[in-house]
Image 1 (cartoon, rainbow, N blue to C red):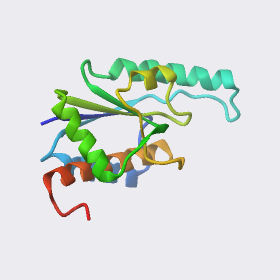
Image 2 (cartoon, rainbow, N blue to C red):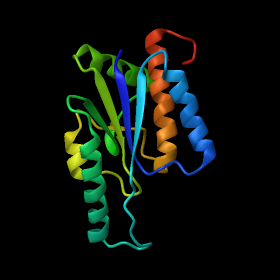
Image 3 (cartoon, rainbow, N blue to C red):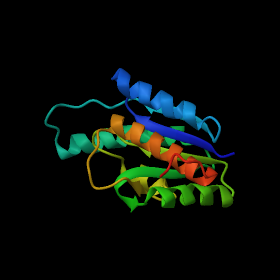
Image 4 (spheres, rainbow, N blue to C red):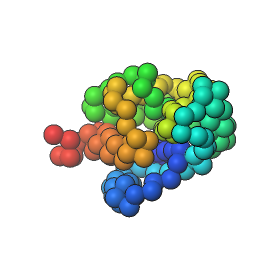
Length: 160
């Protein structure tokens, strides 16, 4: 059984988002051990300069890199990543296990995304489309899609 890690910048502030994440994490128990690691969000002003944004990305990136398990298959979530259908995503996760990885780590950045260093560590980059989603909502969407991927592989009726 492959272990699934999610490294996410920021804490879930709204109870409904925490409830949704808890629900999908619970549903994933038969398929994978899921570990969510929250990284502190770097603060900056309301109208940050490019240098301030770069500083935020660098500091958050350092925190993220320190939490990526050694030997894990890393998937940064970023808009320039590959877009997959749910069945393709399921197959991709299956292939990660076939390649001999025992852990898969998804990385969700903060308000400004991910540093280039974090993106470069990825075995592949993944995008759920060109829409911009709040990073807190992205965590719920990612957990749902991971759950969907495992149910597709298991042949259950969840994915229609």
